Every structure is written in structure tokens, then in C-alpha cells.
Image (tube, rainbow, N blue to C red; front, side, top):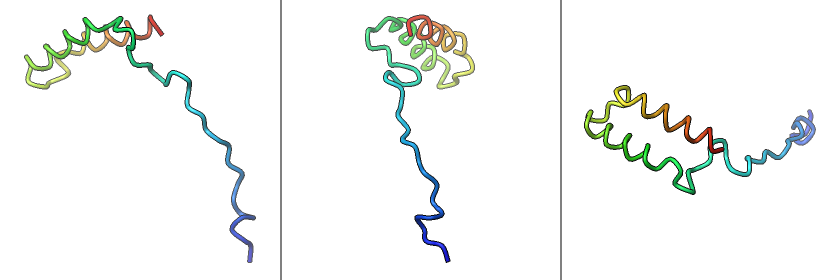
Length: 66
């Protein structure tokens, strides 16, 4: 019978990226798009498909300033 430590594989430590996978907009560079998106979501009664263009604009803004 083998011991539990003998069957265990070595584990490497996983370290998250410094800024995360998609950093938060700390400098408020895309804040205007967030405001527009939230207004759109409220206007369309929480149906995000109708505000997809604004979502894409925000993501593009964030990727541009990464």
C-alpha cells in the first residue's frame, strides 16, 4: 500500500498577474462609457443584449489603455 505523499504530484505555486487579467479602471479613463452603459441597462430593464455596443466600446477602451 502506498502512502498518500508518494502518490501526490508536486504542485507548483500559481501566482496571479500583477494587474489581474483585466485591470480595473483606476484612473477613470473609461468612466463615461460606464455611465452610458448603466443608463442603457436601466432604460432597457436589465436586458444587456440591447446595450452590447456600449459593452464592446468599454472593453475596447480598457484594452487600449492596458
